[in-house]
Length: 122
Image (tube, rainbow, N blue to C red; front, side, top):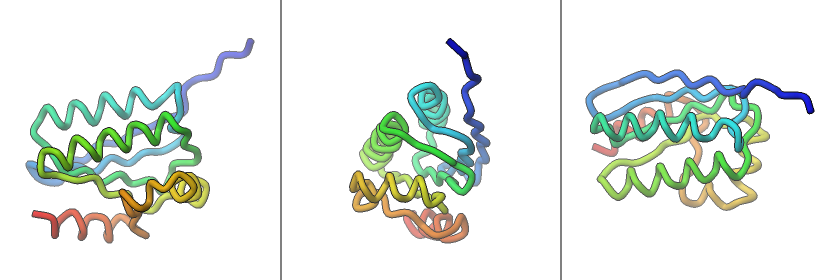
């Protein structure tokens, strides 16, 4: 069986003491979702409660990725924060729409829009 390297890159940019932008690129699936989960947990541990996920370079997401998003939203909202999705690619947007996640976490067209929404949630 051919082994493949997990294809997920996540850049973390701290915006202020409570807001962080995570730029997620590649594939968010069963093999890689744990990495994003760990990075989010680390940021929660640092007291951050607002997360902007830039999905403009995310090519694929499966149910494992959706579960990470849903858990993050529940935890963030439970502590007075939130999760904002920015610029999901068409394939990822379709998954979000089909599963109904867009009703809970509405995606923003661009990073600037998501940051504006996060800034207004103070």
